[in-house]
Amino acid sequence: MTHLDTGNYAAKHTDSLIPENLRRKVVTTTENSRLNCAKAHQLALETGFSPAEVGRALDLLEIRLTGCQLGLFGQSREKKKLETGTTPSPELCETLQAGIINHCLPCLKAWETAISFNLKKTEITAVCETLKIKIAPCQLGAF
Image 1 (cartoon, one colour):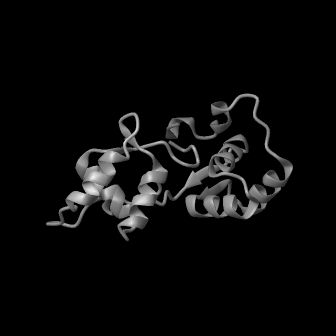
Image 2 (cartoon, one colour):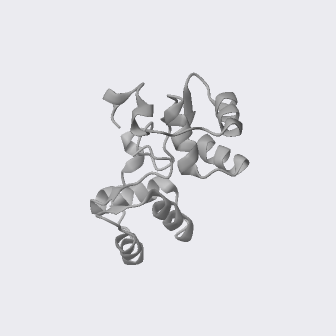
Protein backbone atom coordinates (compact mmCIF):
# COMPACT_ATOMS: atom_id res chain seq x y z
CA MET A 1 0.00 0.00 0.00
CA THR A 2 1.21 3.50 -0.64
CA HIS A 3 0.83 6.75 1.24
CA LEU A 4 -2.18 7.35 -1.01
CA ASP A 5 -3.86 4.38 0.69
CA THR A 6 -3.42 5.85 4.17
CA GLY A 7 -6.53 5.28 6.19
CA ASN A 8 -7.70 2.38 4.04
CA TYR A 9 -5.42 -0.43 5.21
CA ALA A 10 -8.32 -2.81 5.87
CA ALA A 11 -9.02 -2.95 2.13
CA LYS A 12 -6.08 -5.37 1.82
CA HIS A 13 -8.06 -7.98 3.74
CA THR A 14 -11.45 -9.49 3.08
CA ASP A 15 -13.38 -11.70 5.46
CA SER A 16 -10.78 -11.24 8.21
CA LEU A 17 -11.55 -11.09 11.89
CA ILE A 18 -9.28 -10.10 14.76
CA PRO A 19 -9.19 -12.37 17.81
CA GLU A 20 -10.48 -10.31 20.74
CA ASN A 21 -7.36 -10.80 22.88
CA LEU A 22 -5.18 -9.51 20.03
CA ARG A 23 -7.54 -6.59 19.40
CA ARG A 24 -7.34 -5.51 23.05
CA LYS A 25 -3.56 -5.75 23.14
CA VAL A 26 -3.14 -3.82 19.87
CA VAL A 27 -5.52 -1.06 20.99
CA THR A 28 -3.76 -0.63 24.34
CA THR A 29 -0.28 -0.63 22.74
CA THR A 30 -1.02 1.80 19.91
CA GLU A 31 -0.36 5.54 20.18
CA ASN A 32 -2.13 8.03 17.88
CA SER A 33 -3.26 5.23 15.52
CA ARG A 34 0.38 4.29 14.92
CA LEU A 35 2.64 1.45 16.02
CA ASN A 36 6.29 1.06 15.17
CA CYS A 37 7.75 -2.12 13.73
CA ALA A 38 9.72 -3.06 16.86
CA LYS A 39 6.64 -2.75 19.09
CA ALA A 40 4.57 -4.74 16.60
CA HIS A 41 7.11 -7.58 16.70
CA GLN A 42 7.23 -7.39 20.49
CA LEU A 43 3.44 -7.60 20.52
CA ALA A 44 3.64 -10.76 18.39
CA LEU A 45 6.06 -12.33 20.89
CA GLU A 46 3.94 -11.34 23.88
CA THR A 47 0.66 -12.59 22.44
CA GLY A 48 1.85 -15.69 20.58
CA PHE A 49 0.43 -14.42 17.29
CA SER A 50 2.64 -14.33 14.21
CA PRO A 51 3.95 -10.99 12.93
CA ALA A 52 1.67 -11.45 9.89
CA GLU A 53 -1.38 -11.83 12.17
CA VAL A 54 -0.39 -8.71 14.12
CA GLY A 55 0.09 -6.82 10.85
CA ARG A 56 -3.32 -7.91 9.60
CA ALA A 57 -4.88 -6.73 12.88
CA LEU A 58 -3.16 -3.35 12.51
CA ASP A 59 -4.55 -3.04 8.98
CA LEU A 60 -8.07 -4.00 10.01
CA LEU A 61 -7.96 -1.46 12.84
CA GLU A 62 -6.57 1.18 10.42
CA ILE A 63 -3.40 1.55 12.50
CA ARG A 64 -0.39 2.86 10.62
CA LEU A 65 2.84 0.88 10.90
CA THR A 66 5.88 3.12 11.37
CA GLY A 67 9.63 2.91 11.87
CA CYS A 68 10.65 -0.16 9.85
CA GLN A 69 13.63 -1.77 11.57
CA LEU A 70 15.26 -2.26 8.18
CA GLY A 71 14.90 1.46 7.55
CA LEU A 72 12.59 0.98 4.58
CA PHE A 73 10.03 3.50 5.85
CA GLY A 74 9.84 5.93 8.72
CA GLN A 75 13.62 6.50 8.78
CA SER A 76 16.01 8.83 7.03
CA ARG A 77 17.47 7.77 3.68
CA GLU A 78 20.99 8.15 5.10
CA LYS A 79 20.55 4.96 7.14
CA LYS A 80 20.19 3.01 3.90
CA LYS A 81 23.56 4.02 2.48
CA LEU A 82 26.89 2.28 2.96
CA GLU A 83 29.66 4.38 4.41
CA THR A 84 31.89 5.80 1.69
CA GLY A 85 34.58 3.33 0.75
CA THR A 86 32.78 0.37 2.35
CA THR A 87 32.44 -2.77 0.28
CA PRO A 88 30.31 -5.69 1.45
CA SER A 89 32.14 -9.00 1.81
CA PRO A 90 31.71 -11.59 -0.94
CA GLU A 91 30.24 -13.97 1.66
CA LEU A 92 27.57 -11.44 2.61
CA CYS A 93 26.74 -10.75 -1.03
CA GLU A 94 26.46 -14.50 -1.73
CA THR A 95 24.22 -15.04 1.30
CA LEU A 96 21.90 -12.22 0.25
CA GLN A 97 21.76 -13.44 -3.36
CA ALA A 98 21.03 -17.00 -2.17
CA GLY A 99 18.11 -15.73 -0.06
CA ILE A 100 16.27 -14.13 -2.96
CA ILE A 101 12.81 -15.54 -3.67
CA ASN A 102 10.77 -14.26 -6.62
CA HIS A 103 13.33 -11.50 -7.28
CA CYS A 104 13.15 -10.17 -3.68
CA LEU A 105 14.86 -10.83 -0.37
CA PRO A 106 12.25 -11.56 2.32
CA CYS A 107 12.36 -9.28 5.36
CA LEU A 108 12.86 -12.30 7.62
CA LYS A 109 15.90 -13.43 5.60
CA ALA A 110 17.33 -9.90 5.86
CA TRP A 111 16.95 -10.08 9.66
CA GLU A 112 18.52 -13.54 9.82
CA THR A 113 21.43 -12.38 7.67
CA ALA A 114 22.00 -9.35 9.91
CA ILE A 115 22.19 -11.66 12.92
CA SER A 116 24.49 -14.20 11.28
CA PHE A 117 26.90 -11.49 10.05
CA ASN A 118 26.63 -9.48 13.30
CA LEU A 119 25.35 -6.40 11.45
CA LYS A 120 22.59 -3.89 12.09
CA LYS A 121 19.42 -4.50 10.13
CA THR A 122 19.85 -1.14 8.42
CA GLU A 123 23.34 -2.21 7.31
CA ILE A 124 21.77 -5.16 5.49
CA THR A 125 19.36 -2.75 3.82
CA ALA A 126 22.29 -0.57 2.77
CA VAL A 127 24.01 -3.56 1.18
CA CYS A 128 20.77 -4.55 -0.56
CA GLU A 129 20.42 -1.00 -1.91
CA THR A 130 23.99 -1.19 -3.24
CA LEU A 131 23.34 -4.59 -4.84
CA LYS A 132 19.93 -3.44 -6.13
CA ILE A 133 18.14 -6.18 -4.16
CA LYS A 134 14.55 -5.37 -3.24
CA ILE A 135 13.40 -6.45 0.23
CA ALA A 136 9.91 -7.95 0.33
CA PRO A 137 7.65 -9.27 1.72
CA CYS A 138 7.50 -7.62 5.13
CA GLN A 139 6.87 -9.94 8.07
CA LEU A 140 4.05 -7.62 9.16
CA GLY A 141 2.61 -7.27 5.67
CA ALA A 142 3.46 -3.59 5.24
CA PHE A 143 5.17 -4.18 1.90
